[in-house]
Length: 368
Image 1 (cartoon, rainbow, N blue to C red):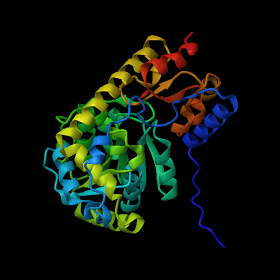
Image 2: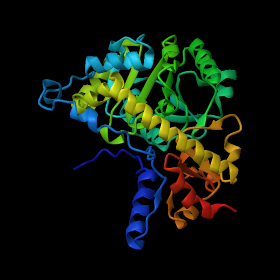
Image 3: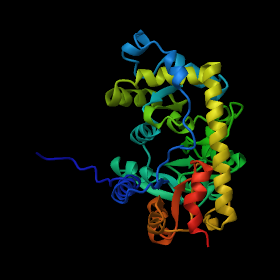
């Protein structure tokens, strides 16, 4: 039979993970798995929340609807948009990557503009959907020369992946405002932001001012629930949402009902909110300590953080992928995250969302 090739590559992140697990099994010695984008300081405690869900109810036993449960979309509006977002402009997605892919399918542009360092799956999704990939050096260049991105989709990922860099919100909004006046669409992809922000964070509410903005978010990242594969997509453009809904219908016929019910209870009940706060507090504290360790021991790739500071769950360090693997640490070369791979092969992306004591134990031998 004839097959339509995707012409995409297997994720480098998956490959290094497979290699590290094989070495771990062969050597019968534990490895510190820092190649993944998984919050692993603590697990969010969902046992009591899950016990409150009636698995025999129609909320679980029937199709959840293409757009997602209305009560969950209303709860997202309340929690993320201060109740200002129209639930009809929200779609529940099977994880953030699905929201990105549907956006890439849905929007007619000549290219996608990414920061110089970007999550490798952006590039593979663009290749899958036959969209040209471009890069911008930093937000300041977007603010200064917005017209350079005419008829492109500009992606702003903050805190970033792979650097974990946090830009000032003023820069983010200045860039969005400049692009808005040039009629250029913007995709805001900030799945890790809520790990570090409380419910008073008004980013998404402020974004409602801009009809050119598409938002993709992931509960998998902000609550440590990667296994549930759930997130959301928001746009004020009715045509965009309608077409996205159709694509979602024929791709999934609705997102897992249990995952939706679980997220609803986490963001709308006092018990759920308490579980989220505890998870975020312990996770963000460990991340801050781990980043400080990198800085204090000259392991951070400081040249990549001239216009920002590391805050997210990732950081780049000045050690190679092979050097880290030899020290029983799985990481991904920074060459995977750039359109100029040879320039950055001596640096690696690591996840810093792991217990501090374990992080120091494995990283200490690399200190010179």
